[in-house]
Image (cartoon, rainbow, N blue to C red):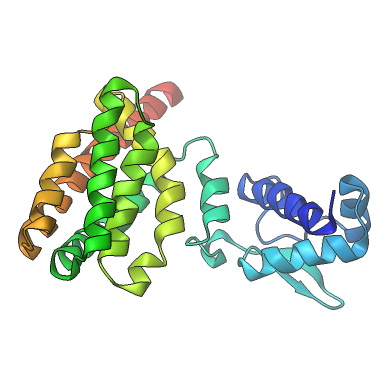
Length: 241
């Protein structure tokens, strides 16, 4: 394994272990020599991996003090790796609920800007995403990939670099949240009609209509997740009695 790939492997393994609570937050990370032995890695490779996790806000490495696992409040949650690791925890519904709130703050505005800034390239991208969603009815495309392509396409069409910069985070979290909300709703794929409704407003240049349609779609997802959280809490309370 090339050193760069090996470093990436350690980052993935160690980062996921931290996110899953195998290395307690606020406590020193396992000694460097033990980690080198565990991964069969040189100190140079391990230190590079630690440096990458430090950049993600998960670790704090200082001379003579060692490496500390930072509290979750310090982690860069817009980092797709961290989000992916956190969503693999058991009981990830609260994280998905926060993610839906973030989407509600971002995606309606992006849809509105897409209606104002739509160009030929964005029009083609969004039309293709809808066509892909329609093709899933005949199993001619992957419904999850098509759904994500639509939402990421709107970020691009907004012509806002900060929104576009969120595409990787949106992509990762949607892979979990779409599957979960579809399962809660009792369907195997998202409603093409609801997504086309949003697109029609964008194509018409109707900023407010696009914002409202996107907000309605996400509010439905928020209601589903909130209901699932309430059911989970009720089950937990019943079990503890």
